[in-house]
Image 1 (cartoon, rainbow, N blue to C red):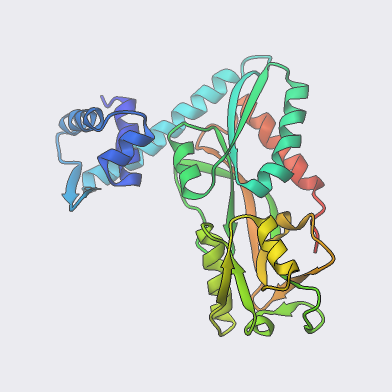
Image 2: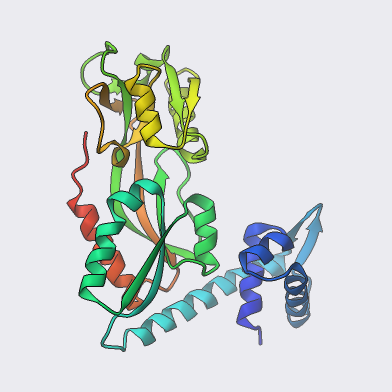
Length: 303
């Protein structure tokens, strides 16, 4: 019989590729991870891992076992959710992580409403996003994660998590108000000669910007980078360039900035809430997911 903790370690190693990264994610020492995986391999009676340079990769047997481990772990989450649902109260601690624009526009009101209705519920919030956030969710470091997906990039496909859609927001072209441009939805070709302000570490938005401009037939000339939308919009306001920004980031813009819908290509991102597979019916998580969906429905996105 396989021990669940060891199956979880194998799954994390499959996602991370090294003993050191797996140990860090699981708050263990590398030697402890190696020892547990060695025991699991003996229990399996066949090699599960082979070394490829500095990384460990799964054998065919290892891949099969990880597929079944995903089902086992999701089943355990579902069992835990079903047991908690037998209680008449919603309580406990829920750890939420979100990217900044969602953390400011969706999460606070959702937490306040959930805790007002369920005084025994405690909710914490931290900034995490992207692959690091998904890894933390899978490892059990957080319970609920807000994620986004851009329409020009591959969708999130991870058997260890489940997504509930919240809202779809357009990417808008932020341009200096004084810039003379055609009326109506803006084709990116109209901005091909402009300097661009790009995200610094949001690799998905950066890739979307570059791919969208490539589809329009040009490479953007990057003049400035920042991860702070306040800074990006300030640079646009000062006439120093143009940018692509999600609608949730444009709630407070000055009269010096024009926000234009983009056509050819149409650009948007879908915002969802992610939980570990099988856990969505946990009462505390179900309450917060419902409140997040309610807050998303109340949004008045600028266009």
